[in-house]
Amino acid sequence: MSYLSCEFVQRILNYHWSLVRRYYVMLFLSFFCSMVMIVVNVSLLQAHPDYDSLKFRTRWCLNILNVVLTFASVVVFEARHIIKNSKSYFKDLWNLNDLFFVVWFYATLICDWVYGTEDKQGLQIIRIMYVVLIVTTFLRFLNLSRVFNRFSFIIQMIFNVIYEIKHFMSLFLLFTVTFAVCVNILGIELDPALINNKEGLTHDTITADKSENPYYGLLIIMQVPMYVLNTSLGTFNCDPFRLLPPVSRVTMWLLWVVIVFINTIVFMNFLIAVISDVYAQTMQTRTEEVFQKKA
Image (cartoon, rainbow, N blue to C red):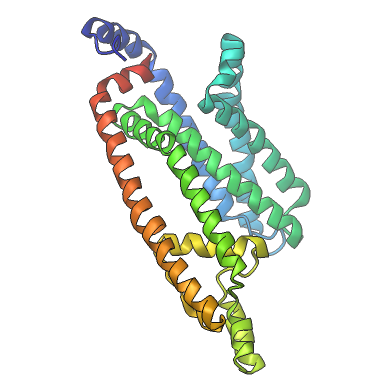
């Protein structure tokens, strides 16, 4: 960073960047068009080939056009990048995401074409694949948008924050798991249907309450940790406490106070302090971050 703060180095980088900037802007615009076609394709995912023939044909016309555009703008560029940089290419997380995007993009379209949207089970698999595709597409979009100075600084700051809080989040996860084990030992019941069943309500009320269970569908081992995480984020639900025996109920209330104090008050304020510190550090090297991307 100290080299990048030198005005002479900055002038050299600006000169060379002016020669190649147009190429990267065109690469960004072509990928932006590809991303738009992916979003339109996902919005028409439920189009049936018989009942919505126009939507179905539109979706696959966009897919064919997108395959050609992606091959010309992404595959060729990444192939040249791999040949030029060899092993060093795989040391950059941005490059790994770009490579994963290429593989996942074609794999998703192949599965979409083979399985179609008529089979419900196949449709669910395709939906999940499109969700992963949208995420990796957005990450590549962020990578390419760094050619613009203002976006480059903001994106770099976001990833600096994520990198710096990894130890903090690991400790937060350990606290959450510890509290979840304690809550599970006390035998707390999180399903409203079972809670109302123990209180003697009718079958219709039980069925209605079961649909309102926010943890319905999760594995049993994941329900209590999600409850503790929701409590740590400020979603306070104390209704399950009333079915516990008196001594366990008092213990649960004491544990709940500890969870709220440590995870909600202490850790959340620590998180704000860490983010503020990273923001201040990034602001000090704002210009150097931009020139590092240009280099």
